[in-house]
Structures are given as C-alpha cells and as structure tokens.
Image 1: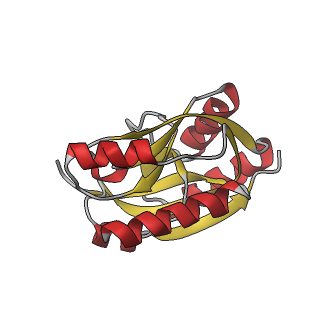
Image 2: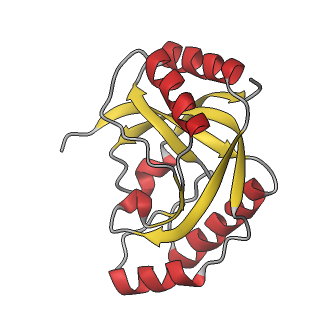
Length: 176
C-alpha cells in the first residue's frame, strides 16, 4: 500500500477527560516505549490542502456545538494506530460534523467514520495487548469533545517516527 501525506481531522476531548486520556497515553507510552500523541477521535481524513483544512474547521466550528459521545468499551487490535483504544458510539451530531468536514475538505476519501480514541500505538502480541485492554478502566461513560484540529500526517501511520512527524495545521473550538 502506498503512503501519502494527508490531513486528519480530529475531535479533541474537553476537560476533565482530556487530562485523564493524556495522562493515560503518557503512562502507556512510557511503560511500552511507544510514541506520545494527543488524545483525539479522527473524524475524517482528506487530501493535503491546508486552505481546505482551515475552511473545513472554520465551517464546522461555526455550525457545530460540542459533541457528547458514549464510551462503549476498551478494545485492542493488531493495527498500529489502534493497538489499544476506547470505542465510542456514533451519533447524529458526530455524523453531521463528519459530513460538514467531508464536504468542506473538497476531496472525497474512502475514510469511514469509526469513532475511537487510541491510547497506545505499539506493535505487540495479541495476549498481552488483550490483557492490557482488560486492565484499563475509563471513569467516563460519556465524553464531551469541544474542539477540532487539522493535522498533517503520513497515511498510513506505521511507526513512532511517523507519529512524531505529525504537524497541527489549524485548531478551532466548537461553538455552533
């Protein structure tokens, strides 16, 4: 699969969830020698056009209020960027936000909305990964997300070096 530079559109959790998830990500990164990253839910991935990214974020920020997502479970996978993650239930507000960004980003992509917040990016065997997933307790049944970021990154992200190369292009608060 070829790799390309894209803009990922992130939904950022509000406090106190933001601080909780950042602390958990930092703890896991330290324990497992994994890259650090900001807690986020990716809502769309589009072409590398900075002006389209700013336009998409501005439009979404004007039209959308903070979004409350229901946490379903802590899960794991063998995909590098989904090693360990919190799965959220999609809802109408999230699908609307995704649609606004998708159309404003101007280039269609095959990204499918699957709301999750990753906690660890690390290639690791299935059994310890699953045990780790079962050992984590998230104290929130719902999480409010109140801001957006557009982040330039390589897709697919496969390594810590790829994560360290991510660059935030724009940030907007949801105000709707």
